[in-house]
Amino acid sequence: MAHSRGKYADFEGLREQAVALRRAGLSRRQIRDRLHVDNNDILNRLLQGEPPPEWTKRPNAKDDLRDRARELRLQGWTYDQIQVELGCSKSSISLWVRDLPKPERRRSTDEAAAIGRRGWEARLRIRDEERRQTKEVAKQAIGGLSARELFLVGVSLYWAEGSKDKPYARRENVTFVNSDPGMIQVYLSWLDLLGVDRDRLRFNVMIHETADVPGAEQFWADLVGADRSAFNKTTLKKHNPKTVRKNVGDAYRGCLVIKVLKGADLYRRIEGSWYGIVESTREPDQQNRT
Image: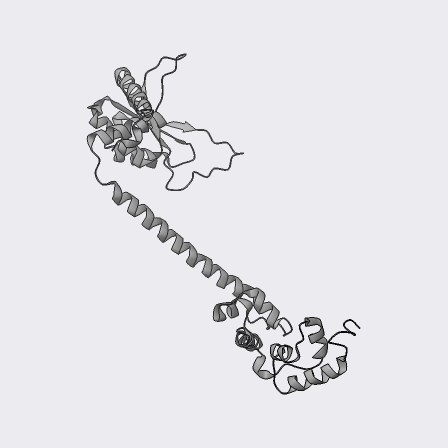
């Protein structure tokens, strides 16, 4: 044995002392100091088989949680329910109760699915309300538009959705096409701002042939406040039986085409204004503008 010629030569005698001290209620540190045993391996061998006194046992903070988790599991609670109740992780719960029988299923598959659907529908309602509130706050933040702001909005709107002149096809027509009633209303307000008389406008509905064509024509006529005489013949899109259409239902009204008669000069002003916007964004002090 190591240290047989050193201070641990009388191992059995030293062990008798260590055991006696242990049974008297001393801790490992106290025994080590009393017997001057500096080697942990030797101390372990001296105290082998001797349990520590009760006062040296540190309480485990999770003992109560473990006991409660086992109690709840025996009552038929699921891991999710225990986690919510006790606030501990599922991995800990699994370690504590995995030797216990699984609770019997209390609901049928259909009942569980129905509960799941109701939960999902509730979450969807919450999300829809969050969307609505976000949009409402953003809408209220806009406030009123100045003439300059409406002008810039209209130029950008037209350049995104209107027809454009090409070097290889000089047309310089002012023609705007869109299916969004809001876009149409903003565009018409912009034309009013530019002084374009309504009698210079011609309208044309473009819609799928299987839709409610008369209903769509009436909808657009009511929206723009124009007589049907200002509407050219509706353009019908032929149905392709191989195509599955998603633009169906009462909300589908096709697109409205708005053309400004004698609009070459207006087109040039629109294009020039757009490039003015583009150039303005390249200015070095753009970020300092208010």
